[in-house]
Image (cartoon, rainbow, N blue to C red):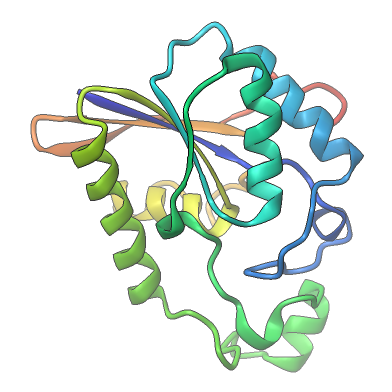
Length: 192
């Protein structure tokens, strides 16, 4: 069985001010760094074989801070980069709704492409790290889309706010990925 733990990156200033980040490469703020440390403290009691991360700096910074506690081999995986929100990036939700009331943002990565990219990433992880415990740091839209797909809409998108530095996990067993836990936040303190 392959087990995949997914961590949403720590908070950024754009998260704190409600701006849509997408592929815009924003770094962690002080709260986000503390959240990543709390993840590291929590995850050090679990055995992992490898850590993977999105190439965006907020995910890489989160992974680097966590890895101070774990000392794992560390690789980037492009399939789990955040969704491209095109012309809406940098806007608050109020600005997005005003500019794009139909939520069709020019140059936005379509949902079909996003889901295909994520599922290809899962296939690669299961192929390269079969029967391993894998830790992956990624992004809200990616993790939500993944869980939406795996649960037939029960978890993920528009169901529950996926918190910064939350931990979710899935396991590949008997030919399919199964959800074990979604949006676990018990390790986070006042910084969440």
